[in-house]
Length: 315
Image 1 (cartoon, rainbow, N blue to C red):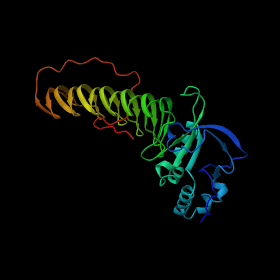
Image 2 (cartoon, helix red, strand yellow):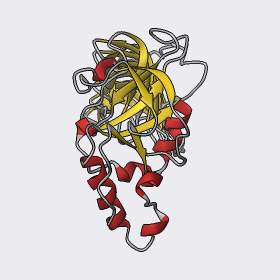
Image 3 (cartoon, rainbow, N blue to C red):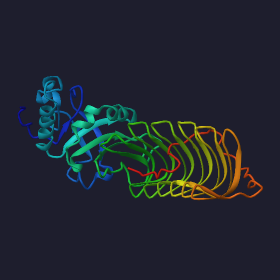
Image 4 (spheres, helix red, strand yellow):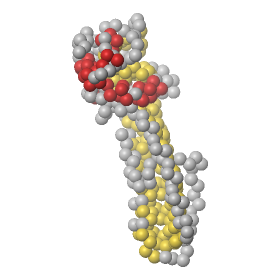
C-alpha cells in the first residue's frame, strides 16, 4: 500500500513532475459551486498539487495486481481536499487521455464532484485565452462557461466544444465519443435539434434535420452496408415520402410510416418492379401507376450515422 498523501488540494495525474512554481490564472467556470474555496489565482507547485511520482507508485509497481493499483489511486484521491485534477490543457490532450482505457478506469469509481480537468479556452472561445477548472462526472459534467463558446468534458471520454446557453449545449457545436461517434451541428437545450450530421463508429452517416435527439424532418442516410435513403423522418424512423435503395440493390420510392412502407409506393427488386398501396410493410393493392417521384436533392456530401429504424439517444 501507499502512504496517505500530505495535506494538499489536488491529487494530480501527470506523467512527469511539475518543476518549480508557476503562477497561472485559474477560473472556476461553471464548477464554481463545487470549488467555492479555490481562489482565482493559485500557485501550481509543491504543497498545492501532488503527483503520482510524489506518492511513489505507478502502473509498473502494480503490474501483477491492477485492482490494487486502482484501490491505491482512489484512496489517495479520497484523502485530498478536492479530488483528482487532470491537467489536459487542450482538447487534443483530452483526446489522448480519453483514448486511454487505463486513464478512464482510474477515475471510474470516484464521486462526480471529485474529478476535475484543467482546460484552456482559445481566443475564439468565450472570454478569450484563459484557463478553467471544470468538473467532469459520470452522470453530470459542468461546462467551462455558462454562455458563449466553451467545453464540456465527460469522464467517459466524451467531449463537447461549441456554443453554450445556461451551461447546456445550445447553438452550433461538436460532440465526440472515444469510440468514434461524432455529431456536428445544431443543438437546443442540450439536445440535437435543427440541422446536423452524425457519423457513427461503424461508418453509418445521417445528415439532415433533428428534433429532441432524433432524426426528424428531411434527411439523408448512408449505411455502412450500402443502404441509402433520402426523405422524411419522424422520431428517428422513416416517415412520409422517401426514396430507398437497400443493400441488396432493391429500391422503393413511396411513402413510409413508422419505418415501414405505408401508402402508395413502387418497389423494384432484382427481377421485377411492383407498384401499389402498402400498409405496415405489406402490399395491399396494386394501382396502375407508380407515385410521382419527388425531385428533392440530397446533401452534396453523402454521409450519415444512425440505422433507419433506430431511435438516436444522447449521452
